[in-house]
Amino acid sequence: MAENKLTWSISSCDLLYQLRQVKTKFFDASTFYLCRASSFFVNSHRCQSYAIFHLASFDQAHSGDGVAASNLLHEIACNVLRDGSQAELKREAVEQLRGRCTDQGNISNEFYGILTQYDNESSTPILGNPDLNKLLESLASYLSPYITKANKAVAGFVEKDIYILI
Image (cartoon, rainbow, N blue to C red; front, side, top):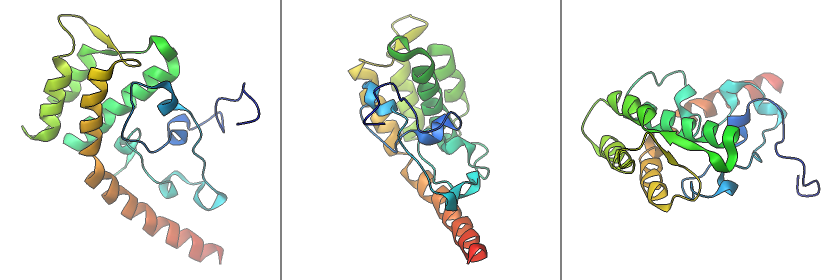
């Protein structure tokens, strides 16, 4: 990828799994470079570690604040990958995901903070938006326990698959 400026991803499938594990700089396009790869040991989705952009696909996470937050970051990543510098976050998407929060805790409060960014507009830009970035960084930090739980399950699958290969 470093040698060929036209290369934008490692593979043409599973794009969200190629996004780096980050918790900062959501306003910067480099956050959304598709440069994360896995080995043949973890070709199966059940053996790939989770990051904030696809945590919601963890099959043991069906609802709750962590799923809502991960879905929001998933939405943001998809919008940036699809629309590039013109990517926007729709207010309606934030409102719907806020409605899926189960309590009035930290994640729910971050959703309310994000909703204050709209000033009666239906969407807000993602890239180049330091105010939205600050809220997204805070939201991402609350996902750490959810990611840890998901990746513990993944570690078990990797151990089983490696044992089978040996």
